[in-house]
Amino acid sequence: MVDFRADIHCHSTCSDGTDGPLDLVRLAKAKSLQGLSITDHDCIAAYKPELFSLAAELGVRLLTGVEISTEFEGIPVHILGYGYDLRSASFDAFLSDIRNRRVERNRAILKKLIERKMPIGEEELLALPTQTHGRPHIAQLMVQKNYARSIQDAFQRFLKEGASCYVPGYKYTPQDAICAIREANGKAVLAHPHFYRKGSFMRKLLSQPFDGIECYYAALPKAQELPWLNIAKERGWIATGGSDYHGSIKPTALGASWVGEAVFNALLQK
Ligand code: AMP
Ligand code: FE
Ligand code: FE
Ligand code: ZN
Image (cartoon, rainbow, N blue to C red):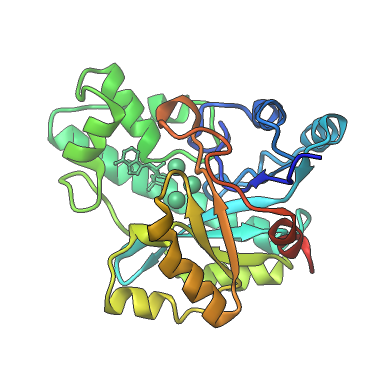
C-alpha cells in the first residue's frame, strides 16, 4: 500500500499553467499521487464534469481549489480556497469580479509598456486561451516580441512588484476572500507565507481568521517549514502544502510537495 499523497497547489491552462486540467489529473496518476487540487488564480473553470469522471476513472481523489488574488497594505497576497461548493453563485460572482479587475489592471500594464516602446495589443493578450489573464501571459508575449529574454527577465526588469510596469490594486483583502470562501462552505488557507516580509506586516496578516496555512511548498528546505508548522500548531490551523506546479514555465515538478490523507480530508470536511 503506497502512502496517500495529494498535491493540492497547482495551476492549469485555465490560469497561468501550461498543462490542461485533464493533463494534470493524468500527471498526478503518473506520479502516483492519490489526490489533487487544481488551484488556478481567481478561476474554478477547471472543475468540469469531465475532470471528475477522469479522476474517478484513474482513482485520483479531487479537492476543489482556487488561489485568490488579494491585497493587504498594498502588497499582493494569495489566499487558497479548498473544498468550496462548486455551485455557490456568490463565490462565482466574487471570482468573476476579481477577473474583471484583472482586465483593468492588464490594460494599465499594457499602457505602461506602450509608454516604454514595448507595444502589446489587448487583443493579443486576450487571444491567449485562458480564463485568468495576468502578468505571466504578458511576460510570455514580451518574450515573443523580443522585449525580454525570458519570462523571468520580463518580471525582473518590468513586471515584478515595484518595477516600472507593475500595477497594484486588487480590490479585495484577505479577509474578504476568507469570507467568500467560508460562505461557499470552503476552507481558507494562507498561501506560501514565506514569500512575505516578516515583522509587523506578517503579524497583522497572521491575525486574519484563516483555517490553514501552507507550510510545505515546492522545494522549501525543512528548516524553513518549521516556523509555519509551529504557527499552525499554536492556532489550530490546518498545515497544508503543495508544489505550485505551473507546467513548463517554472522548474517545480508536480508532487514536489504534498499533504497526507488526514489534511486532505480535513479540507473536504464541511
Ligand atoms: P498576477 O496574478 O497577474 O499578479 O501574476 C502573478 C503570477 O505571476 C504568479 O502566480 C506567478 O505564477 C507569476 N510570477 C510572479 N513573479 C514571477 C517571477 N518573478 N517570475 C516568473 N513568474 C512570476
Ligand atoms: Fe501563477
Ligand atoms: Fe501564489
Ligand atoms: Zn499558485
